[in-house]
Length: 104
Image (cartoon, rainbow, N blue to C red; front, side):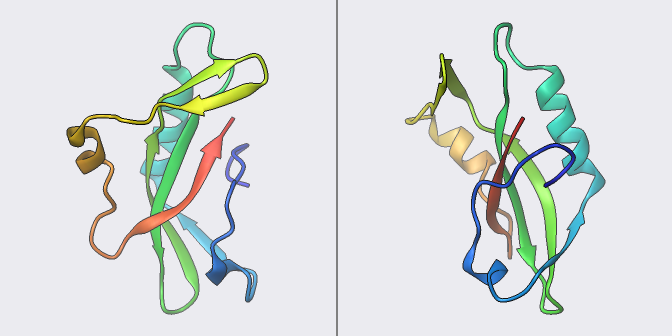
């Protein structure tokens, strides 16, 4: 759990032991800003957490990106088919990968 955000995936490297997390401050601000700027009528925000697992076992969460989505009653769907520019912008940097998602 990250400041009220829930992880929605458990990568295989998390299963062997309890990891230690290091969350960069910009990630916290990005998630909070995403929540504050959500569209009128949106009850939740959804996003992706990017980072890497270090050799010492520490998982560094370095970036957070909002994921555009639609809400209908109790279901949430992401908007597939975004432009190539958006995909390039959200590509993990060198050594980084998608760790999980956040929602709240």
